[in-house]
Image (cartoon, rainbow, N blue to C red; front, side, top):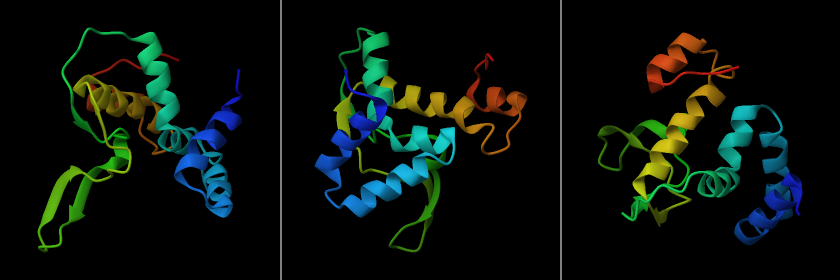
Amino acid sequence: MQTVSERILAFNKKRVPVPALVKLKFELINKDVFRFYRGTCDIFYDAFSRKINWPDTSKCWITGDLHLENFGTYKGDNGVVYFDQNDFEELAPAPAIRELAGLLNSLPVAAPVLKLNEAMAEKLGGISIEN
């Protein structure tokens, strides 16, 4: 069984063949739990698919990395400001529920890093955060 570090290295070796960039990613994901969550969506979706096997056979294109910071505003090439998903490097056809699960799961993970209190995080996601 691979360690978490070995899994991250193996996944990123295929995607980012530049050792300096992989090193930078390791430095960034070691800063806090939310950065780790943001940088290891492959681990989240692997665990998610093992633990939750809803019979959802619908498929759509998901960003595959929808978390609190990948949903927001950006300025389009036409100069218009949009509020939407804004990171598409992990695109994959999958059940739409996975995208929602990734976003909702990011709220309690991000709350302490973004200095949101539990009440605010629960209100944003309509979820209960357990200690």
